[in-house]
Length: 336
Ligand code: PBG
Image (tube, rainbow, N blue to C red):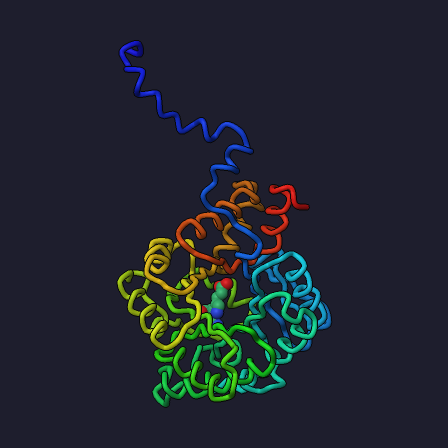
């Protein structure tokens, strides 16, 4: 049989470009550069030492001091950005610690800017769930539902507080309708036309947020399905994208990443502004758990997972692996 295969069938040999690490590097279409990466970090009020997170091995809740060191490291490694989440000691029904200039997140933003200046982009999660005693991303109406428009008023104040505290970029993640427009208007009204909005435009209600809830000591009972998107929906992502663009989003995000790569592709093709994707806590935890059991090669799995997110179309990736990925990039490209 074999001698009857015509020779021209073998003229194209894609394996030629897979022969050595150097030729594979030359042929690689997608790369994960340190500046493509954004490191999410947690800072918890009242800590003097960083506190490890059980469900996210290798990730901590920072004290103010350790956060400053982490921010300095992110800048030194050439990361694109750092995204701050605050964990307060006191919570109430309307998340007052989020709008308070002395609330943990706003204090942390000041500390981080004092440490890194403009050397790395400093971003703030703009949402109420860390600050409310019921754990929802907005305030509740009398019937217990999340009140969209009452929440917007608080987001507007939070935005100004975060901008004044020094955030370069705000990341509204609460999935309230109209949030980007209200935040943009509040920033502009306060003279902060320079502060950008990275909108969590396409954010799905996901089981993979589980470990994050430990990371921010979330008080949530129930779920967020009345405001976050339904995993069944793809077309709706285009609607959310369009609305946020109309409202003035400077960058948009798809979240989670790995279970939504098709949606990420759609958004990347349609978006005129940069697209980020968030490799969330549960995605991190799955890789760590499998690696800890010796079931997968950790480094290869981490790199493949983030490469897939870039290949699907993300310009930047929020990932808890950001610092390690930056180290590996340098090592593999002769830059260390
Ligand atoms: C909401 C918010 C969440 C995450 C980022 N911002 C949690 C949620 O929507 O339940 C999740 C991040 C992660 O899981 O890594 N402020």
